Image (tube, rainbow, N blue to C red):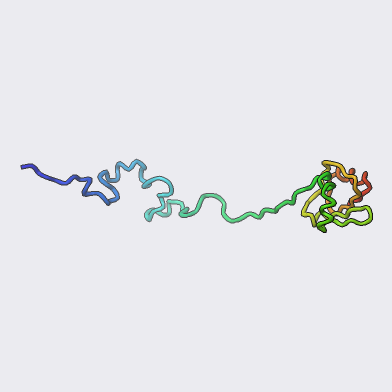
Length: 138
């Protein structure tokens, strides 16, 4: 008489270790890949990194530096900035405050034909060109 026996694999469906047991896992003693070694046994030996990435944590304060503006670009925008109220125009002099323009510095690229009274920082070439045109820097 033939013994009709269910296959072992069908009896083990739904179980964690289907057939092979521990010895054929292929990952040694740790139980798998990745951060799987954070189980309940031997917790003193294992790093406590559950849910966190390695490396520094917290925040760093980043000071945003305002961009500079070229002298030629400032010269071409003087009239439109005067209409917007960001630059004052008195007599034949434009009074430019870099803080109101949200710029850190005037750079020396380009030329100016206007008299500019500048409040803020300027590079050495920009100072030369502004003073050559009859302006001042405060």
